[in-house]
Image (cartoon, rainbow, N blue to C red; front, side):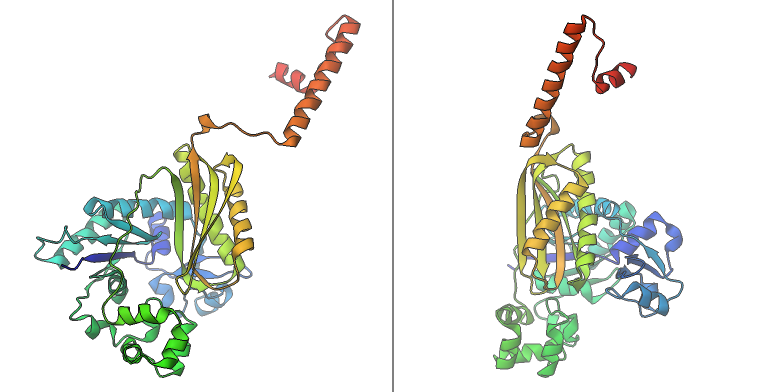
Length: 395
Protein backbone atom coordinates (compact mmCIF):
# COMPACT_ATOMS: atom_id res chain seq x y z
CA UNK A 1 0.00 0.00 0.00
CA UNK A 2 1.32 3.44 -0.92
CA UNK A 3 1.96 5.97 1.78
CA UNK A 4 0.03 9.22 1.92
CA UNK A 5 2.47 12.11 2.23
CA UNK A 6 1.28 15.63 2.92
CA UNK A 7 3.24 18.82 2.31
CA UNK A 8 1.94 21.89 4.14
CA UNK A 9 3.26 25.29 3.10
CA UNK A 10 2.42 28.51 4.94
CA UNK A 11 1.30 31.18 2.45
CA UNK A 12 3.37 34.41 2.18
CA UNK A 13 4.53 33.56 5.70
CA UNK A 14 6.78 36.49 6.63
CA UNK A 15 4.34 39.08 5.33
CA UNK A 16 1.41 37.30 6.99
CA UNK A 17 3.27 37.40 10.31
CA UNK A 18 3.66 41.16 9.91
CA UNK A 19 -0.07 41.43 9.15
CA UNK A 20 -0.84 39.53 12.34
CA UNK A 21 1.28 41.99 14.32
CA UNK A 22 -0.25 44.95 12.50
CA UNK A 23 -3.69 44.16 10.99
CA UNK A 24 -3.71 47.55 9.22
CA UNK A 25 -1.29 46.01 6.68
CA UNK A 26 -3.89 43.54 5.36
CA UNK A 27 -4.66 44.18 1.70
CA UNK A 28 -1.79 46.63 1.27
CA UNK A 29 1.44 46.29 -0.73
CA UNK A 30 3.91 45.04 1.89
CA UNK A 31 7.44 43.71 1.57
CA UNK A 32 9.70 42.13 4.14
CA UNK A 33 13.41 42.66 3.65
CA UNK A 34 16.19 45.19 3.74
CA UNK A 35 15.42 48.85 3.24
CA UNK A 36 17.90 51.52 2.23
CA UNK A 37 20.96 51.33 0.01
CA UNK A 38 21.68 47.82 -1.21
CA UNK A 39 18.40 46.57 0.25
CA UNK A 40 16.70 43.45 -1.12
CA UNK A 41 13.06 42.35 -0.98
CA UNK A 42 12.90 38.96 0.74
CA UNK A 43 9.20 38.39 0.16
CA UNK A 44 6.10 40.45 -0.50
CA UNK A 45 2.32 40.41 -0.30
CA UNK A 46 0.08 39.44 -3.19
CA UNK A 47 -0.93 43.10 -3.48
CA UNK A 48 2.70 44.13 -3.98
CA UNK A 49 3.08 41.45 -6.64
CA UNK A 50 0.35 43.14 -8.66
CA UNK A 51 2.81 46.03 -9.16
CA UNK A 52 5.55 43.67 -10.36
CA UNK A 53 7.41 43.47 -7.05
CA UNK A 54 8.97 40.06 -6.37
CA UNK A 55 11.45 38.29 -4.10
CA UNK A 56 15.10 39.14 -4.72
CA UNK A 57 14.32 42.54 -6.23
CA UNK A 58 16.40 45.52 -5.06
CA UNK A 59 14.34 47.67 -2.70
CA UNK A 60 14.89 50.86 -4.71
CA UNK A 61 13.51 49.15 -7.81
CA UNK A 62 10.51 47.78 -5.90
CA UNK A 63 9.69 51.28 -4.64
CA UNK A 64 9.84 52.65 -8.18
CA UNK A 65 7.31 50.05 -9.29
CA UNK A 66 5.21 50.55 -6.18
CA UNK A 67 5.74 54.00 -4.59
CA UNK A 68 3.41 53.18 -1.69
CA UNK A 69 5.23 49.93 -0.84
CA UNK A 70 5.41 49.35 2.93
CA UNK A 71 8.73 47.84 4.06
CA UNK A 72 9.13 45.75 7.21
CA UNK A 73 12.34 44.28 8.63
CA UNK A 74 12.47 40.54 9.36
CA UNK A 75 11.40 39.44 12.84
CA UNK A 76 12.52 35.82 13.01
CA UNK A 77 11.83 35.55 16.74
CA UNK A 78 8.12 36.15 16.08
CA UNK A 79 8.17 34.07 12.89
CA UNK A 80 9.75 31.20 14.82
CA UNK A 81 7.07 31.40 17.50
CA UNK A 82 4.26 31.05 14.96
CA UNK A 83 6.17 28.37 13.07
CA UNK A 84 6.39 26.22 16.19
CA UNK A 85 2.66 26.61 16.84
CA UNK A 86 1.97 25.53 13.25
CA UNK A 87 4.14 22.41 13.54
CA UNK A 88 2.69 21.53 16.94
CA UNK A 89 -0.74 21.49 15.28
CA UNK A 90 0.52 19.21 12.49
CA UNK A 91 2.08 16.92 15.08
CA UNK A 92 -1.25 16.65 16.88
CA UNK A 93 -2.49 14.88 13.72
CA UNK A 94 0.58 12.78 12.98
CA UNK A 95 3.81 12.14 14.94
CA UNK A 96 5.57 11.50 11.63
CA UNK A 97 6.45 15.08 10.73
CA UNK A 98 9.59 16.23 8.91
CA UNK A 99 10.74 19.81 9.21
CA UNK A 100 11.48 21.31 5.79
CA UNK A 101 11.86 24.97 6.73
CA UNK A 102 10.46 27.60 9.05
CA UNK A 103 7.25 27.76 6.99
CA UNK A 104 6.80 24.23 5.62
CA UNK A 105 6.85 20.59 6.62
CA UNK A 106 6.09 17.08 5.38
CA UNK A 107 3.97 14.59 7.31
CA UNK A 108 2.87 10.98 6.88
CA UNK A 109 -0.95 10.88 7.03
CA UNK A 110 -1.32 7.25 5.88
CA UNK A 111 -2.93 5.99 9.08
CA UNK A 112 -4.84 9.21 9.73
CA UNK A 113 -6.65 9.14 6.37
CA UNK A 114 -7.53 5.42 6.35
CA UNK A 115 -11.15 5.98 7.30
CA UNK A 116 -11.57 9.53 5.93
CA UNK A 117 -14.24 9.56 3.21
CA UNK A 118 -13.77 13.20 2.20
CA UNK A 119 -10.08 14.22 2.37
CA UNK A 120 -10.78 17.68 0.94
CA UNK A 121 -13.22 18.44 3.78
CA UNK A 122 -10.70 16.94 6.23
CA UNK A 123 -7.93 19.31 5.12
CA UNK A 124 -10.28 22.29 4.96
CA UNK A 125 -10.97 21.61 8.62
CA UNK A 126 -7.21 21.57 9.24
CA UNK A 127 -6.84 24.96 7.54
CA UNK A 128 -9.66 26.33 9.69
CA UNK A 129 -8.00 25.05 12.89
CA UNK A 130 -4.66 26.51 11.80
CA UNK A 131 -6.24 29.92 11.25
CA UNK A 132 -8.04 29.84 14.61
CA UNK A 133 -4.81 28.87 16.38
CA UNK A 134 -2.35 31.14 14.58
CA UNK A 135 -4.18 33.37 12.04
CA UNK A 136 -1.97 31.79 9.36
CA UNK A 137 -2.99 30.47 5.93
CA UNK A 138 -1.56 27.40 4.23
CA UNK A 139 -1.63 25.41 1.01
CA UNK A 140 -1.64 21.62 1.16
CA UNK A 141 -0.41 18.98 -1.26
CA UNK A 142 -1.39 15.31 -0.84
CA UNK A 143 0.38 12.55 -2.75
CA UNK A 144 2.30 9.28 -2.50
CA UNK A 145 5.75 10.88 -2.17
CA UNK A 146 7.40 14.11 -1.10
CA UNK A 147 8.02 15.49 -4.59
CA UNK A 148 4.39 15.22 -5.69
CA UNK A 149 3.18 16.51 -2.32
CA UNK A 150 5.42 19.56 -2.71
CA UNK A 151 4.18 20.14 -6.26
CA UNK A 152 0.63 19.83 -4.95
CA UNK A 153 1.07 22.51 -2.29
CA UNK A 154 2.53 24.85 -4.93
CA UNK A 155 -0.31 24.14 -7.38
CA UNK A 156 -2.94 26.33 -5.71
CA UNK A 157 -2.09 29.37 -3.61
CA UNK A 158 -3.20 30.78 -1.31
CA UNK A 159 -5.13 28.33 0.86
CA UNK A 160 -5.27 25.62 -1.79
CA UNK A 161 -5.69 21.85 -1.38
CA UNK A 162 -4.41 19.62 -4.20
CA UNK A 163 -4.40 15.83 -4.35
CA UNK A 164 -1.98 14.36 -6.90
CA UNK A 165 -2.55 10.65 -7.45
CA UNK A 166 -0.14 8.51 -9.48
CA UNK A 167 -2.81 8.05 -12.12
CA UNK A 168 -3.69 11.72 -12.53
CA UNK A 169 -0.60 13.77 -11.61
CA UNK A 170 0.51 14.06 -15.25
CA UNK A 171 -2.66 15.95 -16.19
CA UNK A 172 -1.88 18.63 -13.63
CA UNK A 173 1.90 18.99 -13.56
CA UNK A 174 3.00 18.16 -17.12
CA UNK A 175 1.51 21.38 -18.60
CA UNK A 176 3.33 23.54 -16.02
CA UNK A 177 6.29 25.69 -17.08
CA UNK A 178 9.68 24.14 -16.42
CA UNK A 179 10.41 26.98 -13.96
CA UNK A 180 7.50 25.74 -11.82
CA UNK A 181 9.10 22.36 -11.19
CA UNK A 182 10.45 21.87 -7.69
CA UNK A 183 14.19 21.33 -7.85
CA UNK A 184 14.76 23.17 -11.12
CA UNK A 185 16.54 26.41 -10.28
CA UNK A 186 16.71 29.67 -12.19
CA UNK A 187 20.10 28.70 -13.65
CA UNK A 188 18.99 25.28 -14.85
CA UNK A 189 15.69 26.28 -16.45
CA UNK A 190 17.27 28.54 -19.16
CA UNK A 191 19.66 25.73 -20.07
CA UNK A 192 16.76 23.29 -20.39
CA UNK A 193 14.86 25.79 -22.52
CA UNK A 194 17.89 26.01 -24.80
CA UNK A 195 17.43 22.31 -25.67
CA UNK A 196 13.65 22.63 -26.20
CA UNK A 197 12.32 21.93 -22.72
CA UNK A 198 9.67 24.51 -21.83
CA UNK A 199 7.27 22.40 -19.73
CA UNK A 200 7.54 19.59 -17.20
CA UNK A 201 5.90 17.27 -19.73
CA UNK A 202 8.62 18.02 -22.28
CA UNK A 203 11.23 17.32 -19.62
CA UNK A 204 9.55 13.96 -18.97
CA UNK A 205 9.83 13.08 -22.67
CA UNK A 206 13.52 13.99 -22.70
CA UNK A 207 14.52 12.03 -19.59
CA UNK A 208 12.43 8.99 -20.50
CA UNK A 209 14.29 8.88 -23.82
CA UNK A 210 17.64 9.32 -22.06
CA UNK A 211 18.34 12.52 -23.99
CA UNK A 212 22.07 13.23 -23.76
CA UNK A 213 21.74 17.03 -23.72
CA UNK A 214 19.37 16.80 -20.77
CA UNK A 215 21.75 14.39 -19.02
CA UNK A 216 24.61 16.85 -19.45
CA UNK A 217 22.54 19.69 -17.99
CA UNK A 218 21.15 17.79 -15.00
CA UNK A 219 24.22 15.69 -14.20
CA UNK A 220 23.68 13.32 -11.27
CA UNK A 221 20.29 14.97 -10.68
CA UNK A 222 19.08 13.39 -13.94
CA UNK A 223 18.03 10.10 -12.34
CA UNK A 224 16.20 11.80 -9.48
CA UNK A 225 14.30 13.91 -12.00
CA UNK A 226 13.48 10.78 -14.00
CA UNK A 227 11.84 9.25 -10.92
CA UNK A 228 9.97 12.46 -10.13
CA UNK A 229 8.42 13.03 -13.57
CA UNK A 230 7.22 9.43 -13.53
CA UNK A 231 5.46 9.83 -10.19
CA UNK A 232 8.14 8.13 -8.11
CA UNK A 233 10.23 9.56 -5.30
CA UNK A 234 11.15 9.52 -1.65
CA UNK A 235 8.23 8.76 0.65
CA UNK A 236 10.21 8.40 3.88
CA UNK A 237 9.53 10.94 6.61
CA UNK A 238 12.40 11.76 8.96
CA UNK A 239 10.60 12.78 12.16
CA UNK A 240 11.88 15.32 14.62
CA UNK A 241 10.81 16.06 18.16
CA UNK A 242 9.53 19.59 18.73
CA UNK A 243 10.46 19.23 22.39
CA UNK A 244 13.95 17.88 21.69
CA UNK A 245 16.29 19.51 24.22
CA UNK A 246 19.53 18.19 22.73
CA UNK A 247 19.64 21.11 20.33
CA UNK A 248 17.80 24.30 19.49
CA UNK A 249 17.80 25.39 15.88
CA UNK A 250 15.89 26.97 13.07
CA UNK A 251 16.26 27.26 9.30
CA UNK A 252 14.52 29.07 6.51
CA UNK A 253 14.11 28.54 2.81
CA UNK A 254 15.23 31.81 1.32
CA UNK A 255 12.48 33.56 -0.67
CA UNK A 256 14.79 33.40 -3.69
CA UNK A 257 18.07 31.66 -4.49
CA UNK A 258 20.89 34.00 -3.60
CA UNK A 259 24.65 34.31 -3.20
CA UNK A 260 24.40 37.86 -1.82
CA UNK A 261 26.67 37.74 1.24
CA UNK A 262 24.95 40.59 3.07
CA UNK A 263 21.53 39.03 2.56
CA UNK A 264 22.76 35.65 3.82
CA UNK A 265 24.47 37.33 6.78
CA UNK A 266 21.32 39.27 7.70
CA UNK A 267 19.22 36.10 7.53
CA UNK A 268 21.69 34.30 9.80
CA UNK A 269 21.48 37.18 12.27
CA UNK A 270 17.69 36.89 12.38
CA UNK A 271 17.91 33.11 12.81
CA UNK A 272 20.51 33.52 15.60
CA UNK A 273 18.15 35.92 17.39
CA UNK A 274 15.39 33.33 17.33
CA UNK A 275 17.67 30.54 18.58
CA UNK A 276 19.05 32.83 21.31
CA UNK A 277 15.60 33.77 22.58
CA UNK A 278 14.48 30.14 22.66
CA UNK A 279 17.65 29.03 24.45
CA UNK A 280 17.23 31.75 27.07
CA UNK A 281 13.57 30.88 27.53
CA UNK A 282 14.49 27.20 28.03
CA UNK A 283 17.44 28.20 30.24
CA UNK A 284 19.97 26.41 28.05
CA UNK A 285 23.53 27.13 26.97
CA UNK A 286 25.33 25.40 24.11
CA UNK A 287 28.92 24.51 23.31
CA UNK A 288 28.46 23.98 19.56
CA UNK A 289 27.08 26.13 16.75
CA UNK A 290 26.08 24.40 13.53
CA UNK A 291 25.61 26.20 10.21
CA UNK A 292 23.31 24.61 7.62
CA UNK A 293 23.55 25.56 3.93
CA UNK A 294 21.50 24.01 1.13
CA UNK A 295 22.28 25.05 -2.44
CA UNK A 296 20.09 25.07 -5.54
CA UNK A 297 21.13 21.48 -6.35
CA UNK A 298 19.79 20.38 -2.95
CA UNK A 299 23.27 19.60 -1.67
CA UNK A 300 23.31 20.29 2.06
CA UNK A 301 26.38 21.22 4.08
CA UNK A 302 26.30 20.97 7.87
CA UNK A 303 29.35 22.63 9.39
CA UNK A 304 29.89 23.08 13.10
CA UNK A 305 32.32 24.55 15.58
CA UNK A 306 32.69 23.63 19.26
CA UNK A 307 34.07 25.98 21.89
CA UNK A 308 34.94 25.89 25.59
CA UNK A 309 32.62 28.49 27.08
CA UNK A 310 28.92 27.64 26.50
CA UNK A 311 26.65 30.44 25.31
CA UNK A 312 23.17 31.46 24.27
CA UNK A 313 24.22 34.97 23.27
CA UNK A 314 23.06 36.04 19.82
CA UNK A 315 26.26 37.92 18.92
CA UNK A 316 28.48 35.01 19.93
CA UNK A 317 26.41 32.51 17.94
CA UNK A 318 26.34 34.78 14.91
CA UNK A 319 30.10 35.29 15.14
CA UNK A 320 30.71 31.53 15.06
CA UNK A 321 28.18 31.04 12.25
CA UNK A 322 29.88 33.70 10.14
CA UNK A 323 33.28 32.09 10.78
CA UNK A 324 31.85 28.85 9.41
CA UNK A 325 30.30 30.71 6.48
CA UNK A 326 33.59 32.44 5.61
CA UNK A 327 35.49 29.16 5.85
CA UNK A 328 33.15 26.84 3.96
CA UNK A 329 30.93 28.94 1.68
CA UNK A 330 32.15 28.89 -1.91
CA UNK A 331 29.80 31.51 -3.37
CA UNK A 332 27.23 29.19 -4.94
CA UNK A 333 23.58 30.25 -4.76
CA UNK A 334 21.80 29.05 -1.63
CA UNK A 335 18.13 28.19 -1.18
CA UNK A 336 18.18 27.48 2.59
CA UNK A 337 20.27 28.44 5.62
CA UNK A 338 19.97 27.51 9.27
CA UNK A 339 21.61 27.82 12.68
CA UNK A 340 21.53 25.23 15.48
CA UNK A 341 22.86 25.49 19.03
CA UNK A 342 24.01 22.02 20.13
CA UNK A 343 25.55 20.24 23.12
CA UNK A 344 23.11 21.98 25.43
CA UNK A 345 23.62 22.21 29.18
CA UNK A 346 21.95 23.96 32.11
CA UNK A 347 23.65 27.19 33.25
CA UNK A 348 24.00 25.79 36.79
CA UNK A 349 26.19 23.01 35.40
CA UNK A 350 28.62 25.40 33.73
CA UNK A 351 32.24 25.44 34.79
CA UNK A 352 33.97 28.14 32.78
CA UNK A 353 37.50 27.24 31.74
CA UNK A 354 39.82 30.13 32.47
CA UNK A 355 42.10 31.39 29.75
CA UNK A 356 45.71 32.44 30.32
CA UNK A 357 44.53 36.05 30.55
CA UNK A 358 41.96 35.14 33.21
CA UNK A 359 44.71 33.63 35.37
CA UNK A 360 46.97 36.60 34.72
CA UNK A 361 44.24 38.99 35.90
CA UNK A 362 43.63 36.94 39.04
CA UNK A 363 47.33 36.85 39.87
CA UNK A 364 47.57 40.62 39.38
CA UNK A 365 44.60 41.13 41.72
CA UNK A 366 46.19 38.86 44.32
CA UNK A 367 49.48 40.79 44.17
CA UNK A 368 47.57 44.06 44.60
CA UNK A 369 45.75 42.71 47.65
CA UNK A 370 49.02 41.53 49.21
CA UNK A 371 50.63 44.95 48.63
CA UNK A 372 47.68 46.83 50.20
CA UNK A 373 47.64 44.48 53.18
CA UNK A 374 51.40 44.95 53.72
CA UNK A 375 51.13 48.78 53.54
CA UNK A 376 48.17 48.83 55.96
CA UNK A 377 50.15 46.60 58.34
CA UNK A 378 53.08 49.02 58.30
CA UNK A 379 50.71 51.99 58.85
CA UNK A 380 48.99 50.05 61.62
CA UNK A 381 45.65 51.25 60.19
CA UNK A 382 43.41 50.04 57.32
CA UNK A 383 43.78 53.29 55.37
CA UNK A 384 44.24 51.84 51.89
CA UNK A 385 41.59 50.10 49.81
CA UNK A 386 41.13 49.05 46.23
CA UNK A 387 38.74 51.33 44.32
CA UNK A 388 36.34 48.42 43.72
CA UNK A 389 36.10 47.81 47.47
CA UNK A 390 35.15 51.46 48.06
CA UNK A 391 32.43 51.22 45.39
CA UNK A 392 31.11 48.05 47.00
CA UNK A 393 30.95 49.70 50.43
CA UNK A 394 29.08 52.70 49.00
CA UNK A 395 26.56 50.33 47.43
